[in-house]
Image (cartoon, helix red, strand yellow):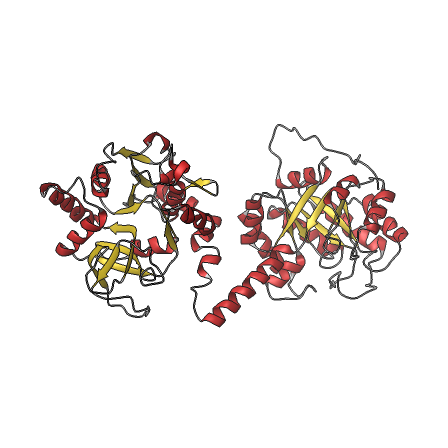
Length: 549
């Protein structure tokens, strides 16, 4: 194998930003080994960009398979073009298209190149086989195109490109088809001379020996690209040493998604329920984030009349007792896999459109200083209760407001359910957190209707009281430390805080007492859930929180 490549290199420090084709060309002609990751639709293209790759391989196999078709040109080139347009719109990355054989002769290739350029595609790879194509991993001794005819396809493509930076890669299938190394080299040289910007040398052997032999004998005449699907165990460093320009990871996003979808479908089919899978799959909010709902929200703020949005108050004045971890910071600032509890709570609130967040600080208040969050202080945190802290944030109790403890984590669907409720006051209650199996449950809820598990039962449940001794009646669940108040409900909240102060109870009252008193005057809706939340009170809880996120 040869050492460091001497392949020609374009100037990288141009003043103007590179086009997508320029970025692809730089990745192939630059000194560093480039990597292209497979994608097959707009969503997977976004995932490739999110993962940090510098370019995308738009695989013919995976695009066809995602359409439920075989990789035999059953998807027409215009159907593939439609998919590519979605991919191009979804990402800023350069896309190298698997153009199969070019979908015909030179005339098809030049029309394809023009249409790809119109859609911002950076380059196309065409293979020296016959139309309709057969996947390289199916069968042996596949027929190859005549060299001169294939060179005509390359020349037609180069003559039709709208940008000088557009990349045409010639894929040599000689080794795949059982031809000799000399034949592969002869074809590669002819395609380079015809104008190909790079050569993709393909192999389906389980080791890379013939790839390395090709590299050695090729002597860096043009950039080489490889697809190590079958020789995946070869160390990537050896590709660098061989002077290879770029590596294509050709089909692994589709294959991994098939594995995940099969397992999820099997689990749901077996359980006839979503309970076991909901916490293991991407959230709907993750989808919204990936497809750019935040940009739409920003555009709505620019172009639509302003509408009131919910606010949030986070009660985080207490220090907690987690030993050395809370020696110089409150519990809400404990790290959970790179982010504090409070950061994770703020992210969950933000995902539901709540960005006006007021945090009530107390213990080690200087440590609670996160960008974008408002703060108020309860300097009497050691001798006062939760309602006194809440009263410190009275300015935030205008309009719709969510109140949450600062040491809880929960799935977005719980908050979304509260926000979508038409009730003026609604609290989240975990119906699975009571009984012998859950001895640590606190803030026990007594309601006028227990959880039935029947989601078609539309009769609402309402709070009677919250405490740790709800009398002889069986508790219905545990309040999770999350409540939502409409504008009317927020007015009731302010009135109840004033009533507690008048009764001399404001200093020591906790949230269960406040909600119980409110329930005696106004309807307080109970929304039942089963799991998908946790609070962090102990080191064991902290360990569980790292698995929860």
